[in-house]
Image 1 (cartoon, one colour):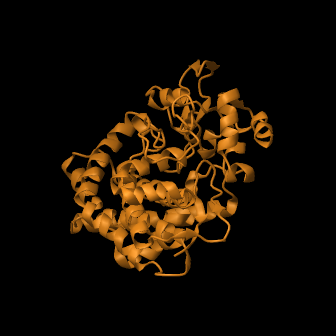
Image 2 (cartoon, helix red, strand yellow):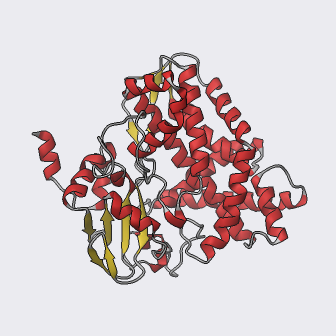
Image 3 (cartoon, one colour):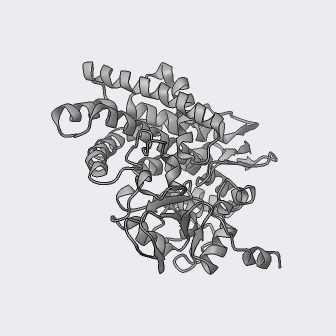
Length: 409
């Protein structure tokens, strides 16, 4: 009866399915299921946005290159437009918010260099992960987020970029502050922290880029300034700086959550953990199932370029469409037993990384990191279990992850 009562309550706001709402933070999937089954294309007048929850609608929307992303193109007052300042611009737009031709001009050379660097450094990346797991407490209780899930992505991206080892603590602090730029509902205090962190990162990246021009090193910043000097990368210094920072900001939080969400799922699904231990070759498929079942990014947005129908509903030019990636990934029309976490089943493709020209640029790196962590972590801690400390879910809207995850080993 309780489940029927939950299903009868269809959310009236996008925020009821997000970490902004206490109930949605603990369980976003029940309200998303109600929307998907009874109101799959919802209009939220408070947020001035449309909200899609069906896989087919979302897959079509994120892959449609005619939709735009730049927030200033959204209708005033909408959720997307909250990233726009009083001058009608957004602060330092990265490829996350750019449209073509600028998006392709910047993303393509950056992606080529980034993916080549990841493949070249894969043994180093795996060694970093192994080292952090080896340095975690050998016994007792500890917060897995603080000891493993948070430091791994920061250290990995720092090594890829070429950050000085003696600045890693500063780099981590600045990263945490800069991540707040992804929250359109941040407080004044959070905005101040974000700006201070961004200013510090700006100065540091400018110094690092200049240093690499003088003395190139074996890192991504050296790769990019070399491509820039040769004309193979057609972007100026500020475009390069802000998009290197975007790799940092976008990758750290989401990979941290991919690690934390996955460990939590395995510890609460012992049969699946046993399957992984029995067949380590399932690790790649396990990463995909974690991404489907408990994706770190809950939603992505697009802006309607002209009057048209989306999901069978008429929409106006400049209206914002939020796509629930979490909702799509549990769509019963696509995934058998969609609410079951099962790494042994080969499923259709999820949309955890979005799609189209804005598909997550860091997806290959996130997969490498998560796969290695899942394998090495449970090798070192075969008897790991959740402690009695309550879980604390992150309050950042449209993201899904744990602030703390206490375990006993």
